[in-house]
Image (tube, rainbow, N blue to C red; front, side, top):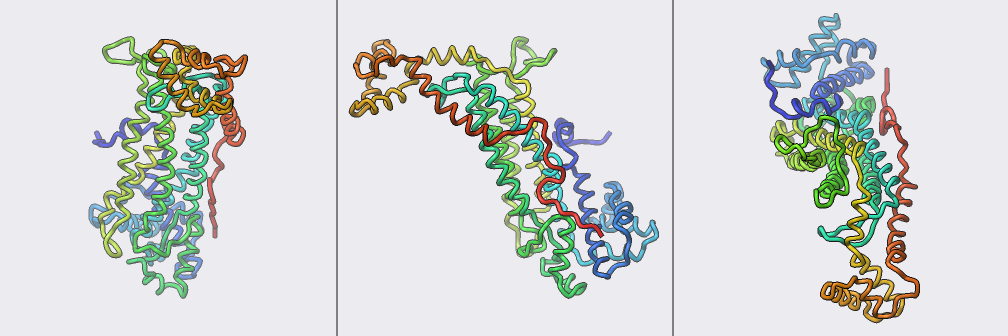
Length: 462
């Protein structure tokens, strides 16, 4: 039996897309090598073969083939190069096999393929995960745009609000971050600059090595980075990771808020519970918000992996291997964020709201949560130092047991006909206006898929 060591391979594998897999990375490294061969063919340097035929031969290279060669070479990229060359030779194209990887260094292949994996992940799966979560947020905000709830700050009752507002705010934050994410994806780079990034090898192949590199990268839908130092500077992939991690952070914040609303003494929401589901190994009555907690737990993993990527900003001179092992974990930033978004989406698909409980808590809070409204109203009515007046009234309410509204009413300045319900309704107008503004501008089409190919996919074929 194969030994497995990562929870990503064991517990979470079923929830991860193939686009983030090691198998996909190997395939993309082979794709980079194929695109380079095609570029050399266009330059007239390498014997020609059709794009289709070349891909049929080279892109099926397996991890087993590469690992068998790597046992001898002790160099992963060289093993891939030899595996591809062997396939071409066996297919009857030894002259083309001689040109595999000529002009490149290993991290031209490795770093360019790493960017391609990130780009393809978002094209196929990542943006769809974001869209699906946005759709759920839109639906919850729309459904509960008028469901009254007591707002909370610092764990204390604050002012009246509506339950849908938190979902609308999360939707807006994610939409803004998604725009940044798409811009960052456009900035992903590749390279074919060779040893120490100085175009030394490609200068021997072409009069204009920069044009050769640009032509090669155009076929992959990437742009060159003239700051490459044999390895691609990590800023581009870090920017994508940071923006995606920020979207995941919004998910973590919402999951944390909802988790607290599921507390027994609050009970304003509950995770959906499937038939036969168990909440505790020993307490049969339990209905723990474990999925929401899981989103928060994954966020810790995400931050640790993001920091790892940040640490790889610094290397020595033109090249060292201090980012070699750590770089293999960069994709876990995207894996963990993906798991968070998918888990929260599934939670929201089945989550149960308890509007009656929300009403009970709002009523229990009484007029104390209208203190801000009373001070604003007092200012409008000409009450001098209205904030101090209402603060003292709140202390009097605590001492006497009277409601805040009753104490203030006794001061004699409230407009005629103003009662608690009317004041509460006035307070909630702002929340509803905000939700409506967000929902109007951020409509998410139910069931709509992210565009095939995603942002700026350019493929040139010979």
